[in-house]
Length: 255
Length: 226
Image (cartoon, rainbow over all chains, first blue to last red):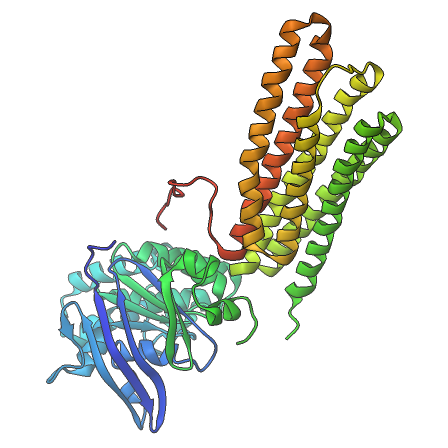
């Protein structure tokens, strides 16, 4: 992996909520077609960190960020970059599935493309199908594409959100505890999906479920009090962590 | 903060240390049986084997329960993995003492005063020290002590080779010494195997302490990508 160029390069990233320094000088690379897990206790800055990777963090009043985030060789914090375009391109899946209310399954998936001005029906149909297949949902919804997205079960809604994110062919998908509200079967489906997603994109996931991080990711970063304490090969982090703090956290001694 | 896993790990260690104590007692008794030429002592060894077998099952069950219910990670995962392997080595050590006992039964019934048993006494004493050292290293999680146990293994191998050479020479000269000579060789071989198991335990202690796998220098685990 040493000669593979990172798809996302983060250098000296800081984030604040007003005076509160939530993310402190993080430098990390994400390799293409991999799953990277971010772990750490509540309030450690990991969610704030990934919200900086698609410029969602600055949407909160009083929030700010500094540093460089380079995605596919483009600095998303560079002068003249439109944050709305970045958010459309780099999708995020949240803890609670959030299909657009009032929109059908089809319209939910096609929403990003329509916002980008794509109207051709055949193209939209093609992308919706591919996205739903990519999210392992097609077989379950192909006969009810025009029913509301909110009519699906919780796990299906989460996969619908993943399909919606996939539709714009993002270089990276960000996931913030995407399975914490799901039952074990739905969780297993999403995890299986994440492993297949990396064939077409790069996944960065925040999770409190350490076993999930161990199951699905190649690399794991441990955050604590806004700093990245350790980042490495997932097997190494979970079997022979280099830092005492990591060991204490993953063995449940704090957090 | 007291965690659920703490009590389970403490109990696991307690069970392993108790089993190790039985194993040490088996080695001690088989050595005494030989020194005292006592078949009674051998019966005690065979009784210990039953207790060790029960402990073997108990410790595997403890490990399985901890893996299934606590999903241990890092040092605790390494400790449980090492314990599963040490449990097997301890059980195999007792099997070796039983093998020694069977050979001794022949020896006790028809001792051969002409055989030189000096090296056999040395190898018995050395492997006893190794087993004690490996168990102490586990209890104290002492990597240095574990490494010193591993270094002793070469000496035990040398003693075994020396016993083989000398006993074969004696057998070649005296046909009447064949049966007892063969017993001596088998006993030496069993003691040497006990040394190997003590070495395995010491290697597992090092893995448990630091995550370093020293078993096969120069080789790495075959890595499959996710």
